[in-house]
Amino acid sequence: MSAWTTPLRPGLPLSFDGEQFTVAEIEGRRILLEPATAVFGTPKWRQVDISVLLAHPSTEILVPVPQDEPSAAAVLGSLDDDGDDALTRRFRHVQEVMTGYQLGDEVLALPGEPRPDYAPTTPLMHRYAAKAVELGVAESTIRNWVRQVKCSGPAGLVHERPKASVLDRADSRWLDMAQAVLKGHEKRSRPVRNLVLMEVEERLRKEYGKGTVPIPARTTGYELLRALSKGTNAFEGSTKGKRSIANAPTGTYGRLRATRPGEYVVLDTNCLDVFAMEPVTCRWVQCELTVAMDLYSRCITGLRLTPVSTKSTDVAGVLFETVRPREVPDDGGEPLPYCGVPSTVVVDADKLVDRDGQPLLPTVAAETIIYDHGKVYLSNHIQSVCAKLDISLQPARPKTPTDKPIERWFLTLNQGVLAALPGYKGSDVHSRGEKVENEAFFFIDELEAIIREWITLIFTDRDLCCS
Image 1 (cartoon, rainbow, N blue to C red):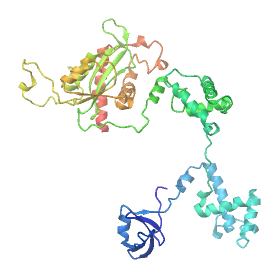
Image 2 (image 1 turned 60 degrees about the vertical axis):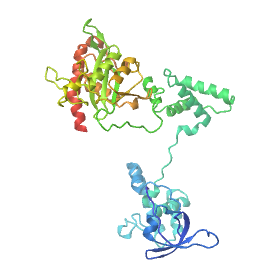
Image 3 (image 1 turned 90 degrees about the vertical axis):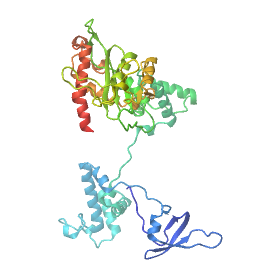
């Protein structure tokens, strides 16, 4: 129940204009209010219009709010077929007690109704006793059923028993200690449940003394650990995911909102789940992809694919690609989206070169760079480039991937194109096939061209259509 009502009647207590009153009289649109307490010995009665009283921001009805109850539709809709049949049978028993007929009316009487013990002329207490004997329950149970049906209809006969939790069977001190032990394993390798139980027991013995805190049985302890570690990857899943879950913000997730293209550009580097070939040695290598995403349009404005690891010069190359227009590729493809000054804008050529005649880069594209705490982003090279281009640097919170929306894009890239390429190795060693290194087929520059083509022809078009 999301709202409740109460009748406006004489005797209703309310608060109005900073004072407490009781409705003394209602006549048409005029309401006479009696003060609850006298000020300086003389009660100050007030007469107000009903619209003024109800619309005034200080008006408050001083009636206890009834307890929230689920709607009848929600209660009845949660029943399965067996529960619905059982409710129907019980409701018919109640109607037979109340009216003498299982369907509640003489017109709908079943063969043989009314039965002698439930005839309408039979005393009600006799009907209670007869139904209690018939069903093998106490008379008070039958009276409760009748009262619940009169109050809430058939939904009043549905009794939702609270689901018992295994956590209710354990001592609170044991639960607190188990949570502390599990928290201590957040950054460690995956623990063994049996050793965790032994550690909890040992720490409880040292803190409270032997035998002070009841220790649950081993099977119950496993159930308790399963309930306490639900959704934390403490005993199942990857340990990297466990650390990521532990580093998630405890409060409500915030969101960085951009109001124009180039206001925020997010930079990030990720190791790709596919092997490529090194063009000189023709051997397979791992690749890292550095990407710049415009937060306003969610367009990829620059990228660089590097073998093994990323250097500060690669990040600077991504920034360079972000702030300057790109030429159309020779094969007729489309360049990456551009959030800076379009190449079709005609400007004075004298303003695009320095005093030595060297071309200058426009400084109106990227205003703020969002980056993580990787060494390549904290280098003097990147600091100098951003100072040269008049770009502000805003670091994300350490180990908080929710601050960088580009993390989701890497998953889209992985599922959209990388998984279909030869040399795909999966997200971890548990997902890797046999000798996938030998399947590496594309050189690094070819793999980068495939990613750029996927961005321009598939990802960007789909993103613009969705927006």
